[in-house]
Image (cartoon, rainbow, N blue to C red):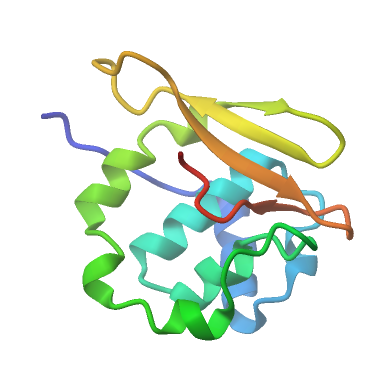
Length: 138
């Protein structure tokens, strides 16, 4: 198996570090959906689950569980680093495809052996910032 590498750009890394400090979505303003998905993956890899949850949409009707529920998810149910890298492999070279006013998905090829491309769902919140859909990969 090929070694899977995942890195943020220097600009994404700066935003990620600022976001980790206060989890303020305003740091994400103007970021494209692919960059936001990369911050989500990096937070998963870093086991910063408070940041993972903060990257989920808060748009009414889209929230699927509370922060308190999220904090109760055991580490063993969150997947391994290899699992995360495999699932989101090549998301950084994916294409964002809008679907209506405030929905869309990133289409990417996680594996060359896959029969179909992967899709990572995004939701634009009322503040105009793209966020990760709960259970983004289906």
